[in-house]
Amino acid sequence: MGCFPCFESEEEAQLSHGNECDRTREERPMVAPRVEKLSSGDDRMKTARDLSTKRESLGAIEGSDFSISAQTFTFSELSAATSNFRTESLLGEGGFGRVYKGRLETTGQVVAVKQLDRNGLQGNREFLVEVLMLSLLHHPNLVNLIGYCADGDQRLLVYEYMPLGSLEDHLHDFPPDKEPLDWNTRMKIAAGAAKGLEYLHDKANPPVIYRDLKSSNILLDKGFHPKLSDFGLAKLGPVGDKSHVSTRVMGTYGYCAPEYAMTGQLTVKSDVYSFGVVLLELITGRKAVESTKSHSEQNLVSWETLVLFYLQCLSGFYFHKQQSGI
Image 1 (spheres, rainbow, N blue to C red):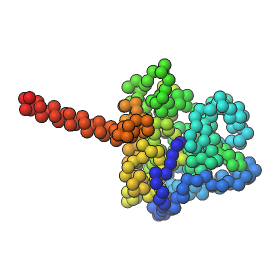
Image 2: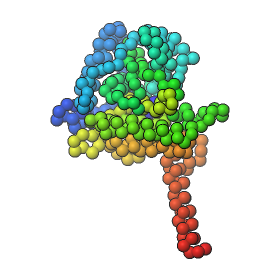
Image 3: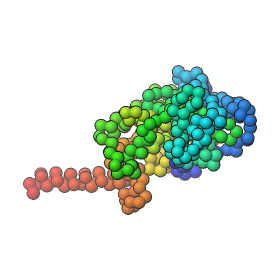
Image 4: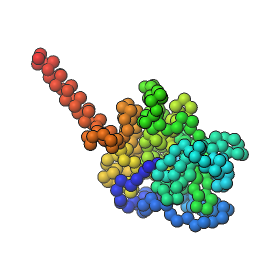
């Protein structure tokens, strides 16, 4: 969702079974590859082969047998579910494409259908990664992937429907008649997002680096229960004696860790930095980046650092004044 390469560099990181887990592979720029127009059956077979290949490159995740639990849907099934992707069903839109609310005719389940833009930022690689990651990783604070569609050049993902939208919807640009989130709800959302990250970093083996944590990717279920979504940029973390994974820098401006942006060395700490930015958004109600403000206030982290510096100076001045009896 709205991701961009912070700068161009090549990545080498191939994690496969056994002793090959630390070998590196080249990662090419995120450009949607050309997809041949195939019949539905042929294309599903091709996607299955691609998933199998991608599965091998992702390496072994402890406790997983690599079974793809997600259902496969035809384009006509999802078109019917969303009433032909009508405007009234549109939930959101970004660089990846559009998300629609729908209802599966077979089960009656309400779902969110993400239709990837064929010329958008999320290509076939990211599509495959998301299907695999959400098929292998399961946690109360991760969104559930119900299924996917790969008919012809159509790429769609079907998720459980989150009735309260995203955290971003409740923090920024909401209507005047809408009450802002209370403090307890904000901390509940922060704690839930932290549990999701903890699972990815500490429970999954090898660890998974989310790489795109931001307020728009934290979806809210009933009772403001948070779930991390959009795993197209997720990568397996370092294993063994490796301290990082070298990769082309991807992420969202304002949330991207500076050391990762400068070196291309990815660690779980990169996600922790992004979580810190989201936490600042929850505390201040401000956006990570606000281009309409003055230059010194556009970046939330820079602005907050400046504010803390001034507060420290004032605190030191007050302490000195008290000690001097002035």
